[in-house]
Amino acid sequence: MPSHRHTTVKKPGGGLSGKWLLAAIAAIALGVGGGALSLHWKRRAPAAPIHKGGAALLESNGQVTVSGKIRPQHIVPVKAGMDGDLDSFLVDVGQDVFEGQALARIGASGLEQARGAAEAAVSAAQDQVARAESAVAAARMESSRADANQQRSRMADDRVQQVWDRQQTLFRAGAGSRQAYEKAQHDFESARQDSEIMDKAVRASTEQLTSSQNSLTAAQKNLAERSQDLEAAQNNMQSAEVRSPVDGLVVERNGEPGKPAMGDLFEIATDMFALEVVLEPPPPVVNRLRPGQQALVLIPDLQSAGIPGTVKAINGGEVVVEFECTLPAVKPGMLADVRFKVE
Image (tube, rainbow, N blue to C red; front, side, top):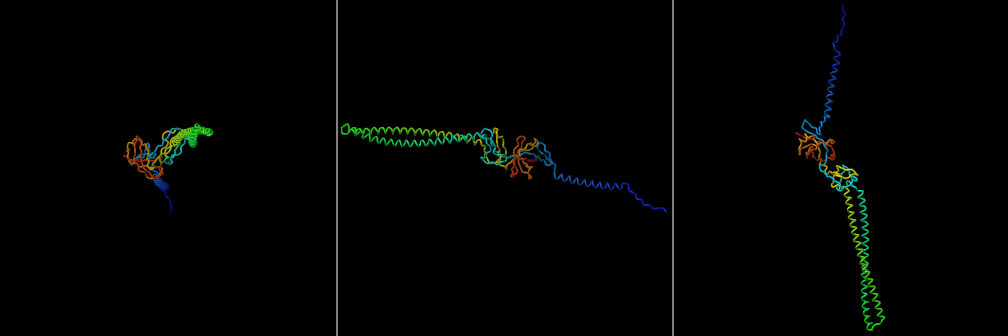
């Protein structure tokens, strides 16, 4: 009786078919995951526009973006008030200043010495005037005293003169005594001598008063001249101190201590809300812009919406876009992107 054998028939390639099936599934999963990851990064980091010559042309919507620096619209330049070497700066860029505040000094050390010498000369001249005034006061008192003494001497001389005349008449007529005659003569001569002394005293006091008054006049003139010198020294000191003509913010400072002060030493912005961006687009872009054209100012350093702006001026290859901003964080010197829509 023939025996029955169970024979397993292997399908050709049956084991390999399962491996290929797993590999296909893995490949599909990898492809789907890679596609999702790629889409994720594309959404997070869009490709940056290519800048050419300072501008990025966005072909899809006809926009052009140009980068430039922000500066204030209203700037007051400050020059040195006199020639000389810059001695020192007293304020820094970015510092708020007020009208009349000292910003810098020019050759101040020598001017301070000149002012000190002028002050000493004025003080000495004032002392001289004070002494001359005291001398004039004393001379006037002496002159008044001499005048009074002269008046008394003249009155006494007149009385003695009358007595002397009378005794002469009596003596000549033989009615007066020699003793009375000689006494009257002696009194008359003494009074005359005293009167002469008083006259000399008056003349001397008058001369002294005149001399004192002349000295006072000279002292007063000297004081006036020294005062003028002091005023000039003080004016030089004020000129040596470069002062701010306005309230504002220092946005630029030029020069170096120890070297001549030339040109504008400072630039002060007076309105920090009125700003502008200076751009230098490529010529093809400049040719497509016009004054008054609307623009959008973007501040890369700030996560904020764009600020409306307007083309203020086009000077050759330079384009100035003005805008107003009340954000304290927006300051001169920051970079800004300005976006235009061109046709």
